[in-house]
Image: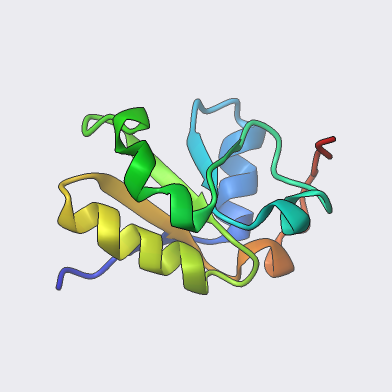
Length: 104
């Protein structure tokens, strides 16, 4: 199994501040994302990823986020095996100190 690329919350914050166009996917459950998501992130619950493969483009890199980076790591392994470019935000939202937005 190929190692998963990672990104730290600090690196991600710098990229967002620099205005980089990033594909962020938050794989937490509905009751977790109500406490805030990274602005611009798309919410697709971990269990819904296999049914949403048509959302992903093999030419783009996706950064996956969860609470602590364990579930997003699992999603990264799954999608990497399918041929997608992925990166896991280590530490997850527990380590995120940047801006968050709240959903209804």
